[in-house]
Length: 206
Ligand code: MN3
Image: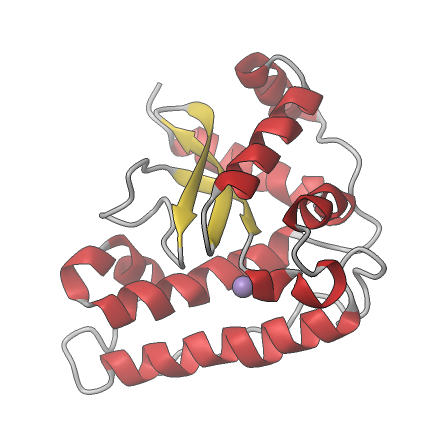
């Protein structure tokens, strides 16, 4: 069965003014759609045709550059839309808040470190908060790679990811990636990130 573009869990203008409607329309409707279409083309008629997206992503380095780029693109964007939302922002609570304070000292230090990971990622890529060996860690990946991939330098389970490709921010923020990274905190849905943390933490080996 071919992969399909998941619907956005909110309207394309729901993240205004932080992420503008036109960026969301093009990012979801054109860029994400292209990853889905090209992934389907890459696996059509091959032994990988009926594999799950997660299985393809985890073995991307052994399959093909097309699956690495487009399978990664599909997984990363599907994940990204889910952890953003309107009426969001603020700070995490509960177990995730405690884990962030314990790993980074404070929520503000964590934000700075994740922003630095995004700003210093040369060219296109993603900044991530992951669970690795039961602990929170910040990392970044080039292009459409992610920390689930067999070829990632730092492997782990993503619980938060920020797209730092120019297509994610250029219409509103032009070359000012730091301004986009400052604004995105207003649309991070901590309830969803908290659930991902509790789920990943429950299966992590301590
Ligand atoms: Mn993108």
